[in-house]
Image 1 (cartoon, rainbow, N blue to C red):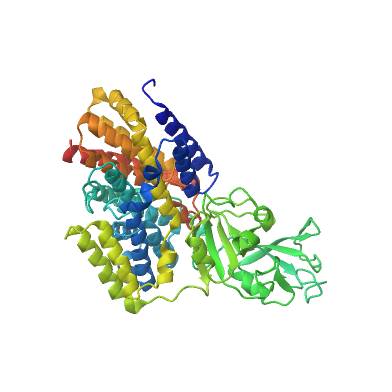
Image 2: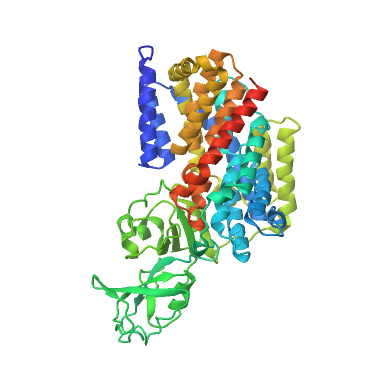
Length: 591
């Protein structure tokens, strides 16, 4: 350890602090990355030019352009024709995963993973409902094949572009569009085959916990209030018609801080809070009855005001996690009112405002128009916000052929004609706006600024790991440990370390930490730097074993009624296969 200079020690301390902050979720990932970068800048490890070089890196500009291209395809419903290809005529779980997985993996090779899952998740759920198949058998596979498909090409996921950007930052040529295909395509094929033939047997069969995302929550906790002086005051629960409700039932009554059982003969008083469990659509039906109103004031100060409803999946970085709605003052800080909570297929009881929120909870929120656009643009509080009714933007199907032509043109420019990817992606983004597939304001909303900031800051962090000597030190240690086993063992060590890091941290963070180390190992062993960069890109995307390993895993968590161990059971063998297949391909092609 004597060989480490003070710059390396400071960098190591900053990285440890960053890892702890990310694992404990003390703040949003972009703020943690920026804070770490600021620490390295103030300490003198990085110059201002080195620290902020990532913000002008081609990787950041490419990711931003690809967000716009994906939004154009989504808004025009240019991929709607895929519905006819996704599902087999004979509905079995294995056959469905094989067919759906093959198509989705291929699509994910060229589009960002998050909009693909957001677009296909409701379709998969509706199809599963019609054919009496538990969505829990299909939604984790949907996420996994999307992640695996992102390994096929350079534009499959932002992580690949971060790796390419770090290569260019080190003075080496960046990755080309299909450089990852040699490893990524076999990996994606094996993942699809495993899930379709064997893996789905490891997933739960929770038919009774199904929660169609578009159709509302089925096991939702919600509250209504007996209007003081209204028609129901003084009536018993049975006389008020609140017993046989079908899709919901009255659990108990809260009155002046006391909890009262919902016995049929219990007399209702004005101001009573009635706590229900059931389908969210029952909120609207019950509010049509005279004598009932919202338990919380509407954001328009009118309990009867019909505002749009939204369903939001809580992200692990959200300020809501571990706190109650009252503690965070949800209405004031988020601009909406939570009407219901659903948690991974579990029934939750208690006062709506006093239930600690968990990552993955699905919230039913009443808010003004635009609530989904505002929070989807941030992704730090909610992984996905979707309108439940009323506010869904109108698609532009007439522009679908144009959007497809722009997308295919981008792929041809980069993959066939050798045009730099940033040029092809930027041109395609402008094409989406110029052809009115997307408006200028919609293009701005499509930009995920948190992801872009994380990528730019990660590139600066990678610069610090490399310039401080920390990468050379760790890389040399890895070479010494694996010296007797050959270069394949060193490659395997890099891949395994990257896979473990991406389960704990953001995948872009794992890439930023491991690329400099991989390049140091490549220099010491005389290996191809591009090959080791591909190894890091594959490992940084292999987040299968936890719901937080990849954001699409968390997106399907509540919708499928999954628990943490469901990801471990299904994801561990998938991760092992990715590891083994990657090493075999690397050994056959490069070593």
